[in-house]
Image (cartoon, rainbow, N blue to C red; front, side, top):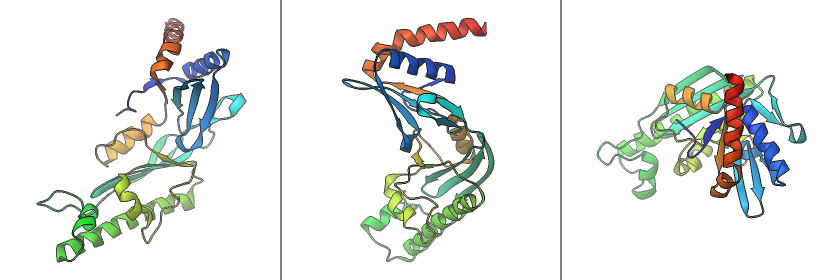
Length: 235
């Protein structure tokens, strides 16, 4: 599992990159809805740094490790979901949910079927009821986290076609689509499983760097030099 086209870096390298950018006169901004730093030049963005969910960005003061980090991830696919609560980056509670949402012959979810042929058949009505209960159970779990813990972030991986049904559930999630602490997960989730939940949590606990084509030309050599220095220090 990875963030497409991004590379994992450590905090020292992230700080070195920001220092290089400042020295070259590039602007830096923080995008809360992605928990991401963006370095921009006159012709557009050069670099994006995905921050760990366990780190704060304090502007001029830089990065700061959260002393009491709480976040939750929800992975939703047609017929299966994985929900988890993380404290200080460790998965402490999780639940995997399943529902009968897929038509056996056609092989697509009941949600998509409702947009085309409706819900006149008995099988469709059963799948619709299962789908509604599926979203309710997901949100019941998330609401229990919200009631017990001061959540810093909510992370979601869910097809956009499901968003209207998910957010319109009779039991709503403890966040809205526009909340700044709701993050759409930047990695591909192949299945909503416990294993994927663990992998996603681990990935979101690290710094990741994405460079534009121009950014590679501007920072590439400097980043390699930083890497060489770090390797020598480790040796």
